[in-house]
Picture 1 (tube, rainbow, N blue to C red):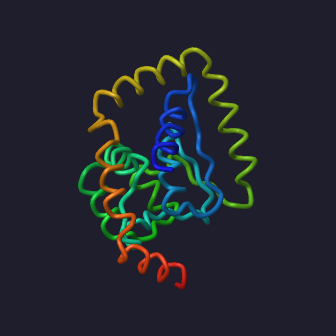
Picture 2: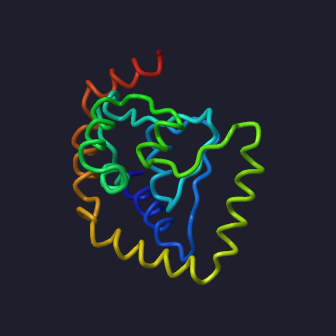
Picture 3: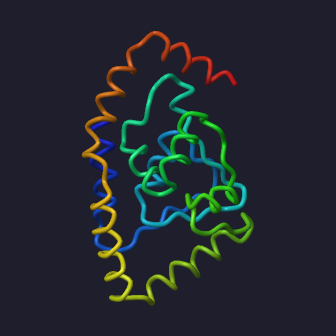
Length: 170
């Protein structure tokens, strides 16, 4: 699963045009990792994000740590990963996790307008995308193998199974 998802998210990152994750609800664990693979993230004001992996006794396995570190910086990444705390949409915008926050009741309308603005950028938007992608690649920490190896080491541990069962009860 880890390798499949890593490839899928890498494919999202390599799409030729700008990508936007539209978050209109909670993004927890893998959902947050998925959102980080997109170039931009927009959220309804009722959205919240959380890296729940640490509380389940595992680590990210889809290069979430690498992406989060690039997006919010080392210290904030470390805090979010270790605490596993919930981050609301407005705080996520302040951290740079999401780019726009709109009221849930007008989210679809705002998203349509946002996407139309991006489409109007045309080739200039694609040039910016390529510059951003080249910069992002220059800052990559690794190929993701470290996260996959760490996840494998933690996955079958009895403490992970117990923590996962407990987290589902809360």
